[in-house]
Image (cartoon, rainbow, N blue to C red; front, side, top):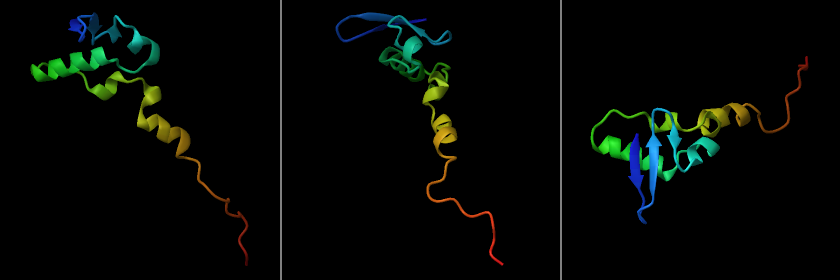
Length: 85
C-alpha cells in the first residue's frame, strides 16, 4: 500500500498487489490512473521489485487483443476457389 500526494495535496491510496486505487479509476476503466503510475515509478526509483506496467492494464486495451480482433480480416476482394485449367 502506498499513499500518493497530488500537486494540491490531495491524496490517494494505491495498492499494487490488489490493483486498487482510492480514486477508483483503475477499477472502473481498467487503465491505471496517474496515482498508480506514480506509485510504480516510485518503486522503480527505489529499486524495489515492481510489476510490469503492461500487466496492470486490462486485457481489453492490450495490442495483442486488438491484433486478434482486427488483423485477421484481409482487405480486398477474395480469391476464387476454382482454378482455371
